[in-house]
Length: 504
Ligand SMILES: Nc1ncnc2c1ncn2[C@@H]1O[C@H](COP(=O)(O)OP(=O)(O)OP(=O)(O)O)[C@@H](O)[C@H]1O
Ligand SMILES: [Mg+2]
Image (cartoon, rainbow, N blue to C red):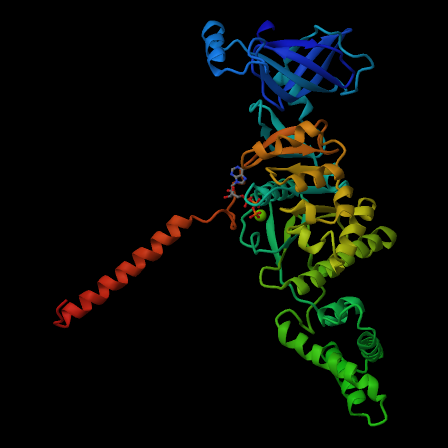
């Protein structure tokens, strides 16, 4: 169809990149097709510039420009670059470059519909930004096994994207685990499955020593404190194993042991201060984390459900405790999946774990307990059916090791150059030209890359239709309500005063 021709290839071409010149204005991200050497090849417009042969850089007088415009009108040319994605059948990169002069056509939407249809494990994400009638589906198997990063500046639509993903996974009977840092997901209503809210409670008995130590805030370099806490901890474990005490007494045994040392006259005096420090820290831990320490609780991991969004509500838990909870759960998830695959005992179904504020739990510049397990799952999870979704508004602060293991990416509006560079380092398929698109994306618009999609694409993500907390506040509305309430209160007071016979 000739009306779809927008221009022709110019200059030297290659099998992966061509330049073209056009009279019509296409859009960056739009798909085009080139027919040559007996095949039809699909490409994506990655950059566009607009110029005029007569208004060049050498003209220094605006009046001259005005005169030229009066004569020529807006006779501009449009020049751009196309990244070739492959032939329209199998998306294989052609062996030969297109001949200069080849026609560039807007790609047929039926071809695109076929490419973005996933037969086996589909999840509908949204529609193409440039051709809205084309629905974009991603491959769930590839998304879960090859991990995903959802990156964008604040308010650009990360949580909405996560909600769309979760609903799509539930539709396929999936199991999702959400670490909900801002209590955003606990009250959501998904269309395709239930929420299984998990209280962020830890039974110290199920913790590993280093998790316990972190919760007690023993610094990494406090070796003496660590040594005594470890000794007491081991004693408590032993007592428990030998059924001398119950879960309930686990902390008590540790404390009793510490006090025994403190009160022992023969105990090495120079270590006494450290033991006292440990005892104080345990006391503080009990005070501070009384609400999340429960000696009778079952392990969180034993309550995960299939066809559910399992949400751990971390909204009221501080960063230290969140770190311990996330690390504990991720460690156990990996372990129990390994157990299951080895001897059918453990976690019976694959799970997709979503970590909001991933840059806090797995930061680039300091060690945390969660980072250890997040990066471990990023590396090993694929084999055991543990998928990872890292959600962050600050990709530059996110552990680059884990980020680079995320083969799939959904990148919404991202303005900060350091963030952009960091993302580009982690993903070889994000070209310089696509990077320059990131600041101009609107809310909910994203670049989608990775194995879960056959070709990189610009998508308008669906708006999540269920109910969701955590959207933008109506600030003016909130002020308005407060002011009206205040005015009403004063009116009422005045009325009361008047009724009492007062004069004002
Ligand atoms: N695809 C979309 N279509 C329509 N509206 C959207 C879309 N994505 C996001 N929004 C709207 O934009 C607002 C912010 O979205 P969201 O909460 O998902 O952003 P965020 O990136 O998670 O922000 P934060 O960094 O604060 O967590 C919400 O009110 C939401 O309704
Ligand atoms: Mg959010």
